[in-house]
Length: 211
Image 1 (cartoon, rainbow, N blue to C red):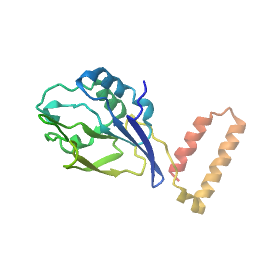
Image 2: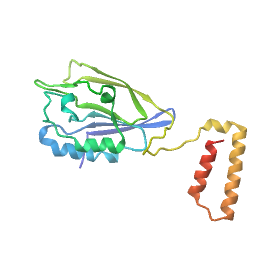
Image 3: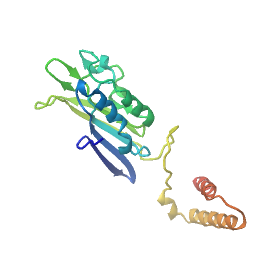
Image 4: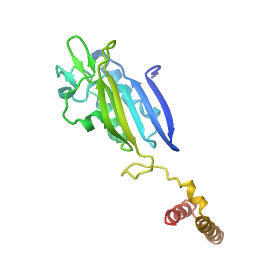
């Protein structure tokens, strides 16, 4: 299914660490319930699950109508596939994480109000502040999100992350000596016995971390 104009992705490099931002505009209206459900189910190919990711935009659905819509009816599509997306990628609603029980709206129509514009992030992008400001020429308020970006790789249960060595270590003579010694030992072992390259790399990496 084509989503021209509905999905925009960008990768950022901040202090030698990559982050991904995914901006979306989900199908709107009660008559597009099926399209809305399918839309969230088809987002996976656009998201790099290894990188810290920020998914934001107009989701055109409300997770909890009691807190995110007035009057609190269930007229908007129930986002089952959005819940699946959140669970599968370990995403958090930044506003809800800072305001667990707040009743706040962003879109204002003639006889209803709702919070359709949302930010979802992984734990490596921790929300610090979430500000909503009125805009005079739009029916949607302005949302300003401030994040604390963890630029070091943290281990999160169930999430695979790349390991990178600090290049400043190579300026230390003793460190370089240890690396050369390890390489010589690995080379000797691989020549004498049947070796497993992955196992050798894991052994090398674990030893490197402790140098």
